[in-house]
Length: 204
Image 1 (tube, rainbow, N blue to C red):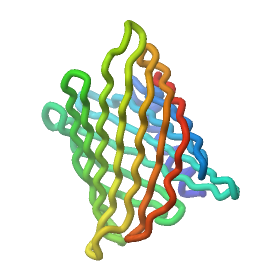
Image 2: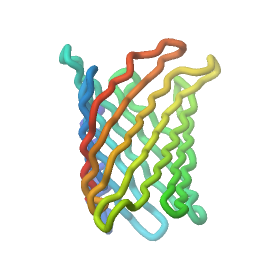
Image 3: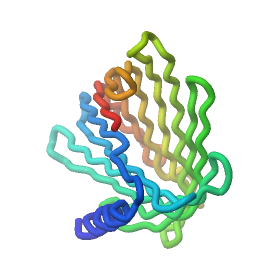
Image 4: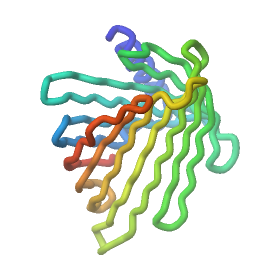
């Protein structure tokens, strides 16, 4: 917990020197297995340099709490391609420095974001995050939303961990979003029971 607080404080200090930092979005999801929040904050430190922080917290109906946090420092290489220096924290892994690349591209109502990183200390493993979003306009103020995210960790042993999130809903003025949700995860070859429910997301 002390390391988590240190990571969060470091992220807040970095955001404090950012020239344009803002809370990007806050999502709350509740399902038949557990409830969770997902907070994203982003900012610009200098031309071509940015910062992104993400904190997820979850609790199941047996009061088992989970948490995960990260802070990314980014440098725009060209177009939608950025170099990334990342610090992750989770209770099971502790503090983990990582480096990699991220890419974002949008085309009409579609957008794609991908992040690939590798750890800089033991245990050595790679991680790939992919997020696909489709947000067509339904009315003047209402959009449809289909969003799928997958995170996969792998090492020399093969597949270590994966987590998926799927959202289908509507967005009001691109600010408030709500709908159906499902979260899933796999550790090695073991699958957890899907967490079916609903979500509410506010973008800032």
